[in-house]
Image (cartoon, rainbow, N blue to C red; front, side, top):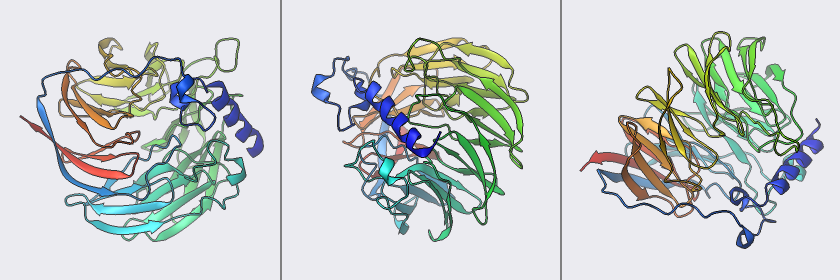
Length: 410
């Protein structure tokens, strides 16, 4: 599939899903005509925690109107975050003081800018990030570039043209950088020079969600999912396939019904791998050979969290499922956040934390899913996954507000 065909595919998906509130940010979708149920109302509860803000700062111009999720990342004593328009900043994670600020790329001049049908009024172009490792900050763009910056001062180490959008964070094993492109390729680049070492190609279906899985490196193997519904394991050194597993077979008469994108980031724990697919299943696989261990009929495209011997899954209706890691049995379900467009969950201590489109962060108990605390962080909403360090949550809101939040028992 060439670049123009890929662009048309994305338009088709957006048009087909135009009636869904998830795509109400598209310029041709009239939110006043939506006939779907509204987001669930916030429930009342007795708070058991204080969510104390340690500091607050701003990162560029925020994430814009496109569905960008740019998770901030902790590197030693600093937190690094990016906006959708090329601003990258490093802050002291204890005080919030800015250490450096740089700008990358030119969103309106890239070779793929003519294919930006998603929202011409929004020139954001940083879509994959933030990746960190081996002294590098890694970002992908809709212009088809992977950028590597020096974590010490933000200076550019290299940039590599990969000829297709990179909308998931690149990752590194210290020797190579791995990036997945929206046209179905997993690419390995040299850590020092950005030169392509190998690529693994996967055939795309006619229609896909606008998203890709983030590759995960475990030992000498790279795991990732594709829009075809497949999850693959390849050798990091040369891209040689080890195994592949189809999470879900396409079903239905229409191409929309047959969408089974495996966009969740594979969760690697011990000898198991946990994966999910849209309009499909959540599965536990053997890390060694891809053999299925258990499965649940849950449609998802959001990354998982793990804790208390459970896997936490946010489904496509924003219902949270807690699944026993070993048996695959559902332990509890939390339905109070339906249609609130939740961010990927993060688990620590006894807490499970998510953000929503109204800008709240919600804390629930890992043990039983009960409400523990809630606080509004950003009026523009929260889409990006949060980052944890020393029991402090770092939250990047859609407006570009970056905050450090401490959870304290009352």
